[in-house]
Length: 335
Image 1 (cartoon, rainbow, N blue to C red):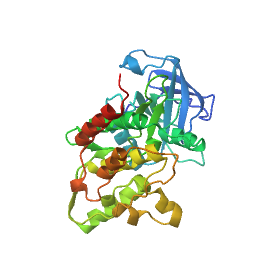
Image 2 (cartoon, one colour):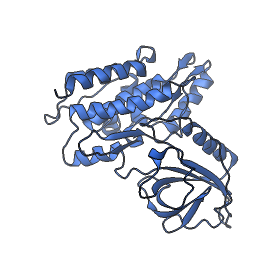
Image 3 (cartoon, one colour):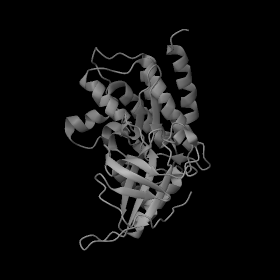
Image 4 (cartoon, rainbow, N blue to C red):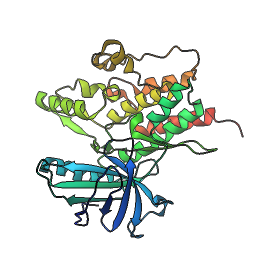
């Protein structure tokens, strides 16, 4: 699905609440800002029922999430177009779908030079992110059960497997609890959806010079959260092949965080206020010692398996899905 340009937003109003926004043939009332920057909760006022093709994505109460992106130059325009293109590739129950989008021209005021804005429409998930849930549970000194950990993680693996199954494979490039929407369901495991494909791109890159290695490191430092960033993106060799196993490292860090509330390398930032690079490239995992959180050694070994400093010995997503299925069977209550 390519970018569409709509002239219906000429009357675009204040995006902090009360304004109306057109996304192609659909009109939305902005209700309030969400917890994410430049993301708003909107309610559909005028709709084209044929626009959202998958009925499962149609909101019962007409509310959706809308991301607004300010576009001030051609480079930013191309980045938005690429995010839309990549987001539109994926169709999986554990990946947040892009429902609609529009790139529109707006009048520039005297003190603003921007000429365009992009609107990206997504399903609204009111329970927030996995990170939000982790913080709330930490405040109460609560933890997910072993089975809940595995069920949430299994869904992330399933979504990531979809991305890695493309030819060529796509890497998400920022797997972390803050990029996982978690919807709590009574009597069922929470529903997890991986979101934010602004950094996603073909995973496999050939690095054949020092300048290419430094360029990749600089890109990673700007786009991938430090406590979840793979070692090869901190210290990239001048001759190497980068692939989707950078996501596997982030996935291992995320599993640790689901269990213990933080990345395994968060301590390196907290204790020294310096880069966690040394701890990461040497895979120096600091396991919690609190007596009130106990997980089977199987889970700790699972984390260690993914956090191999050498990407060539790191497992691929298919291996991880097989293993997590076995662990779910092992720790599910007998029926």
